[in-house]
Length: 77
Image (cartoon, rainbow, N blue to C red; front, top):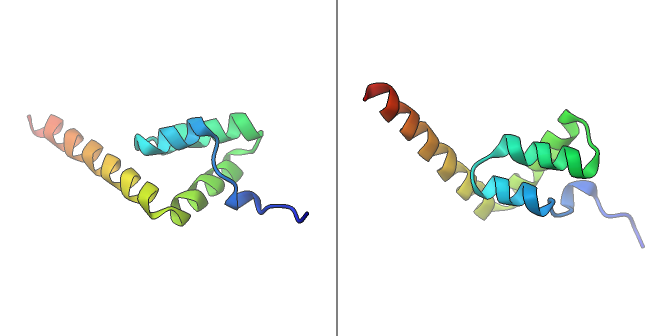
């Protein structure tokens, strides 16, 4: 059985949940802890997963946009 490409494996559940909430940094932390990867390897793994999954990318983009809007409102208010 050929080895599966590590970038194509699903992310750990906690990392996927963090991404769905727009928390990229937390997702990277979960991947590092769960898989014992370094910072760069974990970051590349999470980014590859987001690129492969358009629904996840849309959720992440929406959460990040919502966070930016809230920050702008807080600054102006």
